[in-house]
Structures are given as structure tokens and as C-alpha cells.
Image (cartoon, rainbow over all chains, first blue to last red; front, side, top):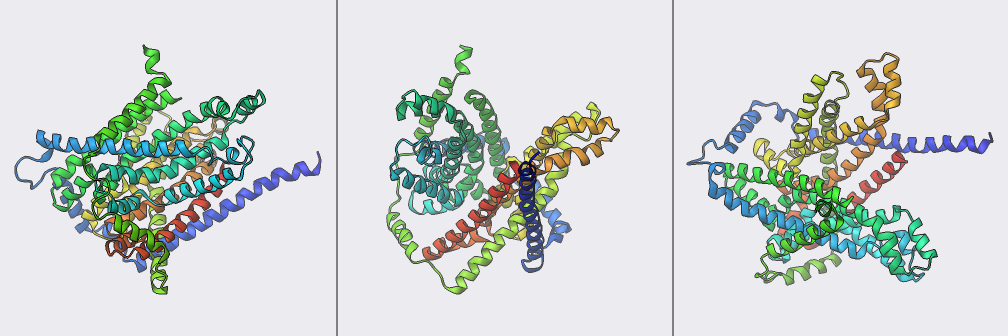
Length: 290
Length: 261
């Protein structure tokens, strides 16, 4: 056994270990600093959790959700209330699909030059520097849209666009465009290059290579990610709704500020129904995409 | 016919139909950009050149970034404390008898599913009503859904470890607890760590969103600056936010690459 072969695995073992230990230590230090900051400087009273006052308020709140103190019949037992909020749930579902479509279409149009093996690797259509510029621009846009949370996008967009499900869908779409774009570009970078290489060797053009060598590998994974993001988006529609983007979220916020707790309960039920339905649908669609 | 419903063509038709339906659900009658919306948009974009950089404001932005980080880290620690034991129970690895195992797994999985189906901002709004505007609101609102996610993922990781070393431990007479401590846990640890760090990255974003209900942090100041029409301040805060997220993002990505390879 020669010496080089003995050292390499050892050094390989050692390097990851040190970053891991550093990260663990840093995380522990951060955790201690955070908790002491919150408790001593930021008036974060842990004892508030154990005070009887809090528990009285919690049980009181749960009672109100269940309809305690509401005059007349509570919203959960009124058919017209179900119909009215059902329209909002319908809007919310439409908003989530629209948002994920914006993100999906945007990504499909841009993700190829954002993959390094296509922009300047072995699958590059040409050696022109345009591809390199495109790569960095698109990756930059992905990073920017991804870094800004969806709620902040919604706050900014509501400023200029008329509030409604379109504005909400745009905000959600922008944030998810960045996430989905990065994931899709990484799929292309991690794919098996051999089919494309074989096609090129057999004299295929750029488009043929894309259609028969790259897309068949990339699209199923792309749809899996798209569906996964849809599951997340349906949960976040509520959030952009809070700032006025319509749907269940807006009504939820209004009902809370008017203290219509029975309506809050009904909206929560619709929300959970939507989330569960989308999860089940995604599980089915994922099987189709495979 | 059955074939058709399981084909990719059917999937494409479904997706196109969903797109068409969602476009039709939008109320296109109203003007897209609301009247008077263009002027603030231009002002907002112009403000990028007029960043607020006074030392006192930068100090405030820095403090807000730290506040956001602190809430996220505290929330994650609580989520780990919640998700780790629940994950062990939900994986069912400690029980040998099928009679205890099944109900134990199902009930904890159901509990974890409830925790994570509700978005953290919704939890935050509910907690504001219950305990008021304290940092604990943000921390708890983060810890519950994230505890639910971590618990489920931990359970899956515990179940996915290679079985041979465990069998060897059992053959040498270890109890299920010892098999867990000396077999499953050490093998599961890299994956658990990797996923937890990914969640830390998400937690920072979640806390920024949550400050919308009124608990401090970057998101709160962004909201204030937008309401006061001080776009220069908004941009400065947005840049702080992007840098904070990128730093955590890079840390977690490098660590995860190391752990997985």
C-alpha cells in the first residue's frame, strides 16, 4: 500500500469533521447568546408560559373559537357562512395555482442558461461570452428574488398593484421563482451528461440535444419540485392575504381584528381542508410525473 | 383508459387546465396598476440611490438583524427540543411489540401533522391573542410548526438507517434503547444535522415574516418604513435582510455539502 492512498481518506475524513464541529459550536454559542438576549435584554419572559393568566386567556380563546359568547348561531353551523367563505377558499386555491404557474413558466424560460454545464460547460451551445453573462445575471435574479420573503414582496407589490389575488400570486410567484430556479438549475448541473454527449457525437443539433438528451431527464424532477413548492405555496397564500392580497388570509385577519372568533374557526377549517387536499393531490400527481 | 390516467400526457392536460382555470378566476375587469400606483413605484425605485446610511439608523438595522437571528435560533432550539422526542416516538423504533407500536406511531404522526399544517404566521396571530406581543410569541409560533417538520423528518431518518449494524447490536444482546443510542442515533446524526441547518435558514425568513404581527426585527422595521414612505430606509433594511439570509444560506449549504458527501 503506498503512502498517498493511506493519507487521502484520512484527510478527507478530517476536513468535514472540523467544519461540522465549528458549526455545532457556533450554533450552541448562538443559541446561548440568543436565549440570554431574549430573556435579559428583550423582555422575553419565559415564565409567561407558566402563569395562570396566560392559561386563562388560552382556554378563553379556544372557547371563543368554539363559539362561546357569540350571539345567535356560530359560523360553523351556518350554511351561508360556509358558502361565503367557500368562495374565498376558491380564490385562495386559484391564487396558489396562478403563483406556482408564474414561477414555473418563468423558470422554464430561464433555467437552462443558469446551469453552469450549459452556460459554459461541455453542453454549451456556443463559446460566446453572452452565455456567461446570462448565467450570472439569471443566477443573480434567482438569488435576489429568493432572498426576499414572500410577505415582503406582497407588501411592496400591494403598494403599486390593485389588491387582489393577482397581486398576491405575483408576490408568491416571485419568491418561488427564485427558489424553483435555483433548484432547477441544480437539477441540470447534476444530471447525467452521457445521453446528451452521445446525441452530440451522433451529430444532433442544439435543439435536438435539448429535446432528447436534457429535457427527458430534467422535466420529471422539475415537476416534483414544482409540486413540492405548490404544497408550500398553498400554506403561504394565507400570509400574503394578510397584507391585502385577498382570499382566506385577508378575511382571517379582518375576522381576528373584529373579534369574530367563530368566523376565525370556520376560516381555519377551510384552510386546513385546502392544505390537506393539496397535499393529497400532490402525492397523486407526483406519481404521474415519475 | 386506465393507462391514460397514469400517463404524462394526462399530467400535462391537468396542469394546463389548472393554469387556465386560475387565470379565469382573476378579476381582470379592474385596472392592474391601481390609480396613483405608478408614482410611488418610481419613487421607490429612485430611492435605491438614496439609501439611508446615518450611523444611528445603521445601528438600529444591525440590532434588528440580530433580533431576527436571535428569535430564529431560539425558535429552532425549542423546535429541536419538541421534534427530537416526538420524532423518536413517531419512528416507533423503541417499541418491539406491534400492539404498542402502531397506535404510538399513528398518534404522534397525526399530532406532528397538525403542528406543521398551520403556517407559522397563523400560529403567531393566535399566540398574540393568547400571550400578547412578547418575543415568546415569535419563538413559540416558530417552534410549533418547525417542531412538527423536524419531528417528521427525524422519524424518517431514524427509520432509514442501514439495518445491518442494528442487527449486529441486537444479536449481541442490546436492548432497543441501546440499539438506538449506539446504532441509530450516530448513523442518523449527519442527516439530522444537515436538515436542521436547512431549517435554520428557513427560520430566519419565517421570523422576518412573523415580525409583521408586531414582534420586533427586520420585517417590522421594513413595514414601518414602508408605511412612513421612507423608501431609502426600506432599501437599506432590504439589503441587511439579503446579506443576513445569504450568510446563513452559504453557511448551511457548505455544511450540508460536507455532511452529505
